[in-house]
Length: 197
Image (tube, helix red, strand yellow):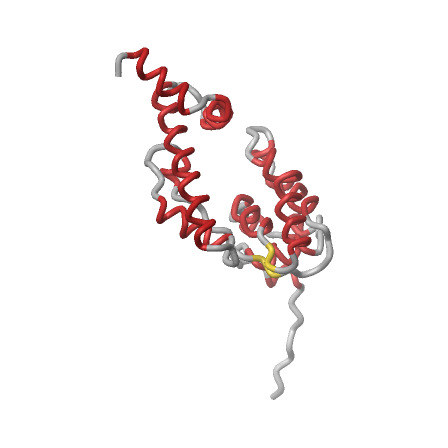
């Protein structure tokens, strides 16, 4: 006896599946604003917008396309993504991500590495070797000597921020970033002298 195949509607096929990150990235490349609505409730619960920002912003290919994705993701999504009101609305976050995409079809996205969290949060000093490894992943074609110099500059700047965070523990990291741009190393040295250190 022949078995009759029953066609299962696409929505039912997805019913018990996890959220598919790469399917979502492909939907963003197509600027598919309706994708989030087609997810099941379970998939919507597993939707991780931060991961999508990381993947969307880094495109391997021509420098024009890569630059567009990086700047557009920052402008349309990352800038307001973690605002306390926006973060409560994942569908709005999806729209912001779609707005960042140029809608030019499938691109090759790559994971953008991160600096260690404790370094980013100014809890641990940065090390030149680790920062150079980070820069090497992001700029694989860059000159090794240049990357060493950039890494040393980053480490020096991060140490200044750590020092400012220690002096002003009540400030947010964003405020420390602004303060570090206005305060010089000489200012810090003078401050330490004035304090008797």
